Amino acid sequence: MGFTVAIVGRPNVGKSTLFNRLLEQRKAIVDDQSGVTRDRQYGITDWNGKTFNVIDTGGFVPQSEDIFEREIKKQVLIAVEEANAIVFMVDVTTGITDLDEAMADVLRRSTKPILLVVNKVDNNERLLEASEFYSLGLEHIFFLSSMSGSGTGELLDALTALITEKDSSETDKENQLPKFAIIGQPNTGKSSLLNALVGQERTIVSNIAGTTRDTIHTHYKQFNKEFILIDTAGIRRKTKVHEDLEFYSVIRAINAIDEADVCLLMLDAEKGIAAQDLNIFAQVVKKGKGMVVLVNKWDLIKKETNTAKEFEKDLKKRLAPFTDVPLLFISATEKTRIFKVIETAIEVFENRQRKIPTSQLNEVMLKAVEAYHAPVVRGNSIKIKYITQLPTVVPSFAFFCNFPDDVKQPYKNYLENQLRASFKFTGVPIRLFFRKK
Image 1 (cartoon, one colour):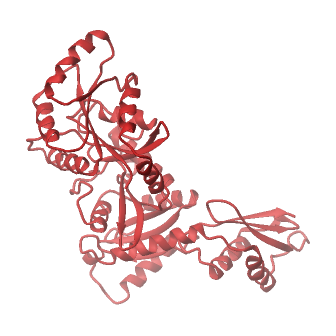
Image 2 (image 1 turned 60 degrees about the horizontal axis):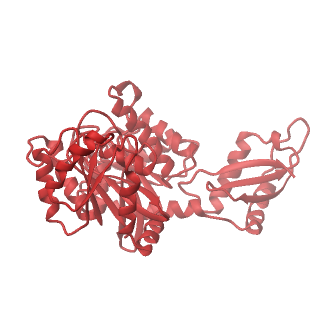
Image 3 (image 1 turned 90 degrees about the horizontal axis):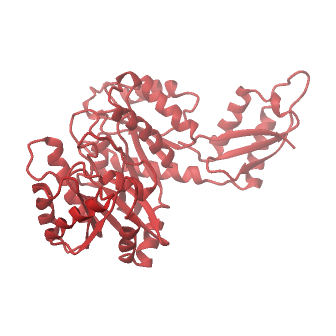
């Protein structure tokens, strides 16, 4: 594993602002409501040539009746366990609170390096007030303002001093692993699938829709398979987006699609496929990402003969024209076929990386062209002379021909189907381009 730094502290001290500043992007959702960051958030940053992971955690509230706050406490303890170093954040404007003392108490028992960060120190007067935090008895103390960024350099220097070259290169290596995003509407069981795969409670699972607000990265390494799983907040139809937070989450899910190599679209077996799902599906295709469709809660469906077959037929009809997509019937809670999900996702990932030698491509595709010529347009017969795969991330093919603009969609579909029949591109959108030689 690479080197990981966790940012912890009570609610509203500015952890996410620091997290965003370290990553130089708006990754964490920042809002003045306390408790917006409910789960651990991951990011990667580098400083002085060293790369490390940063975890942002929800605010720590030790004794609480609130279900989310109890869950947050669990999350914080996991983050502390996962991290190699801990940034403990406090707020100079409120001074030391009981919560800070409770947290310091938990952290003092840890053997890991603890860096105490006093936030919102943006003038000399506050610098004087900040000295009371020495009484927490933690030796590394930093004064900074995460809003303006003053003082973050010293903190980063201290952090990178703890990181070896080996840790740094491991962190880099992790970032090249396949990334799978679990996407879909709220309450289809995305977090349950993640927990079933990873075998521990990584995300907060409850029946309240919209529990997972951020995307969460989980490094999976079991059974000789290694990849990063991205769990996204449920994507909502626009009419239901009341809170701004939900709006952020939709954007976040779109970003997760951008970040992923393969998207696992979860549907609820009882509800079937809705317009919103088709919308997400179209986004994935448009962005040229791999795709696996998972029908969850299949254990709850009353089975007649060929239920799965009919469901599949109906689904493929709705997904047309891109129907070369793996479809799996699973149950996240019963753990039915969930390893098949991983195997399929890895296959799709490999299909997306597939490069076909030009000689082989021409041999197969020119035969297909011979077998069925493009229709004559305005008296011009279209001749395709040569085909090559382009060096792009999404599998793309250039067909060189005499009248590229006259090739119509049905013929393009025929060529795409021939490509799919001869070479494995299941689950991957492919692009065809027609060019003049």
